[in-house]
Image (cartoon, rainbow, N blue to C red):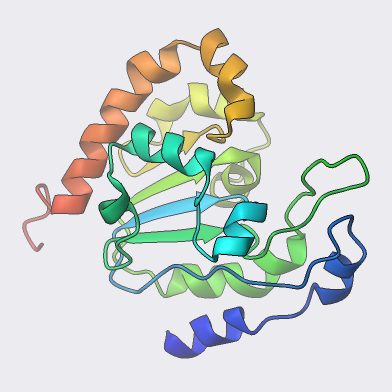
Length: 201
């Protein structure tokens, strides 16, 4: 496991790709998992603030996500319980219009299955956004439809929209998300974090 984390942290496969973006940045894989983790947050890719801080969800999206999960900062960043594994470990950069570029598929092809194989204790997976949902669920549906069908995957998996503040309008259009899904998710997070429903825990 230590070797895998070091290999990911040293990865420079996308160096030329990132150098050609509007941000012209260098790779900086944000690696945040340990084998004993029981909650997996499968996200999209680090943003610029995460890239600079080298800490996942170290931005406004992270504050919203922690609220959705019912976790304080200390619990969220406890690597003995929480693994945060994006579809791409590095910030992909911005395009010419200043929009986020998608996670490079080569990252997941190179690293993702190996990481999943080394997280044997995961009991709850939170899938944030379409890229993670398609990889883990094999779905071709859009994010709204996948999240709306959350009961098909609970209690082991919960699909979520991205917690970006750009999705505030989406939340207003879909009040069922906060009224129906989030209470169940928060209860499940607490069960998993504290091993309340695991006799072997």
